[in-house]
Image 1 (tube, helix red, strand yellow):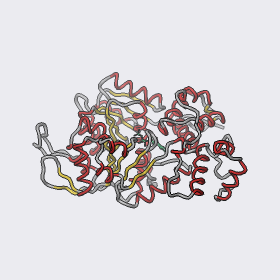
Image 2 (image 1 turned 135 degrees about the vertical axis):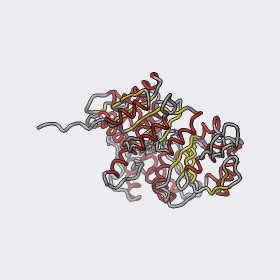
Image 3 (image 1 turned 120 degrees about the vertical axis):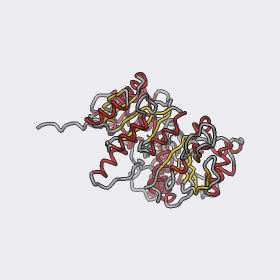
Image 4 (image 1 turned 45 degrees about the vertical axis):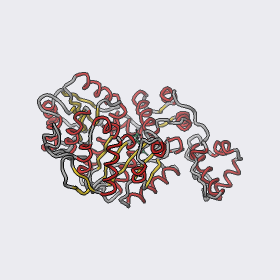
Length: 466
Ligand SMILES: Nc1ncnc2c1ncn2[C@@H]1O[C@H](COP(=O)(O)OP(=O)(O)OP(=O)(O)O)[C@@H](O)[C@H]1O
């Protein structure tokens, strides 16, 4: 019997007039399992796209002759089925935003690391797949899929569902790489604004390089160099959501202006006295403790209260127990699909290693580790020995610290005990013996308590190590 043909690798076309930059992007994406082609100009890229498919086009914005912006417009005009990702320098961010208005999927500012590039291309590919499905007439699923079955993720999902129904400003907190942007995208997709635009703004860049006009736009002649009207992010996100990523980095002058928009729901373009209504839901993320930033005088307290109307805390990966395995399996499946190989299974020792590790870089780190192991490994099992070198900097899991346990003053002792037990169980991937040991109680006592809470005998056991 003949073997089924392996799934073909997703294809990426890299367009850049600088040979070294072009090659380094191509190398990263080649290693991540994409079929990569390169071109040194937009005109050459259009010729290639006439005859060959590229799921994603990664193009530099500024190129001699035809620019990246013109390339996007041409891709749209010719209805070429590719998602275009722009690469841009700080100075040309406004043109990159313009490119997004013209149809580009997203843009990436230089300098960026390999992980960010892979993230963006993976998202562009997801978008392309969703579009392809809807072009074929099937119902388009939600753009984002947030995986996880742990108690912590179930609570988060419930919270998102409830908050998505409102139009409140949301502050999304959590460690780096934990999925804050994904939470924001999920919230947007589930909200009544889901069909509208989702516009992101990386605030650290804003504070250094950009001005008020980036947020609110400007009128022609408003200042030297303003030779055309410009649409700001608030206007761009009209009818949708605006994500202010790492909001603590906004400088004090802009903090005041942002506060006013949140209070009065109107803004003015720089150089105009005409107020425009802000039909935008603001979502903000931070991986710092905002209250500390307020106490230190770095962040306005009144803005903090405005933003934190509804706070969401995204739990770190190390508190999500068996989700580590679920995510690892999913990431292995998509990496091997890109590589055109069958999906590997996790060796039991590899599963245990993933469960024991503390994941300081959270889901992004897990994604990178699994992708690398898939690229470097043989077909078949994902071996512990392939993963361990990448986890060398990490520690074995420590027992949960009291501060990470969701207990609070005002709670009954029984409720606090239940939460501690559930958090510990999640922390050890549902492994009852290890949970009991960490809690300093016997397994039978633990099982008795779990039975009282309504758990089936092994319901919460997702650990392969059992
Ligand atoms: N629950 C999840 N299911 C599937 N993928 C996830 C999940 N959480 C995060 N990811 C993936 O992990 C990567 C990092 O997520 P994201 O960018 O949302 O994190 P972040 O907290 O915003 O990071 P940073 O603090 O660096 O801005 C992305 O590729 C995202 O798609």
